[in-house]
Amino acid sequence: MTATIFTEFLPARPHKASAGRRRRHVKELPWRLHEIAPGAVTILVTPIWCDGSGAFERAFLARALDAQGQIIKFKSGGSARIAALLQKAYPRADWNRAQTWRAADNTLTARPRQRAA
Image (cartoon, rainbow, N blue to C red; front, top):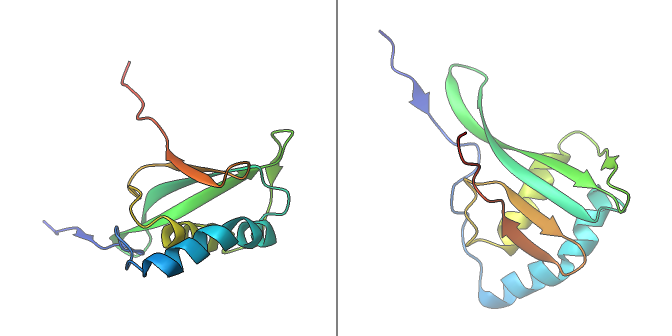
């Protein structure tokens, strides 16, 4: 019987920056996210576990929506860049749960857990 090794692609708790650096990340966040996903009003970031090479790794899947609710496509690697930017700006968020960022007020909220039927 083989043992499965669990490793994380990104840490559960990223390194915390100074308060001034976090404020700057939050202030610049809409501009940086709109470089990756132009016109995004809402971005949903979901952690997923992948088994690419025998070990489970956590990656993030991001979906950006415009004002009409249409999905905005972005270049390869955009999900990881979006997740990294949000983790820098909001290091205290629970990154084991799906998070929703809203451009209107530049806030990040955790998605409620789904109850089993």
